[in-house]
Length: 219
Image (tube, rainbow, N blue to C red):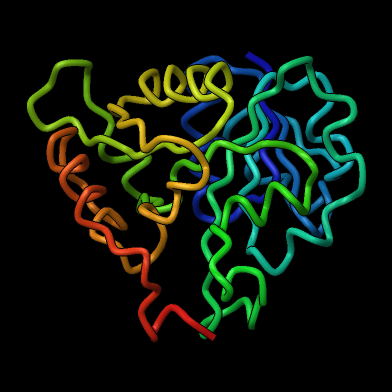
């Protein structure tokens, strides 16, 4: 599968490592340019590209940049992507630590719905509560008793299936958290955030979430 990854930090770098190891054709980009990705490319075989080129012909695009950087992504970012491209948003709103105040999110818009509006394309929220090292260390075969489950939210059911199948290939179960308006259940400060339980534990954590954003996760 042709996959574009925008952002080469902890999550983006480790997804690049795992997806190339599984045989996918991965292009990876960051804000500093492809010349800064030489080491990752040599390690993994991924193709370093400019952000504007990351989605070209891609069937899956992973957006894994700080929320404050999402509005700075190039206009028409997905214009050259494959028809029906599935876009994964791994982002979280960290107002006090990193992103500053984003008024729409403070007023109750879910983080991924805000991202959708910035890039002009539906997204599937996944990996946002996953520790980056777990992407390397926690994959397990299907059916393993200690297999970790990841919550997945999104309105596009076809794209969601593509993402869930890809996560399964990576060695994790998934739990469908419904549409994007339910994705607040995955946001920082909820019981599922950072949770490495199996499917039943993740379902229970999602059900226990409160829509009230606690003070430490507000600007």
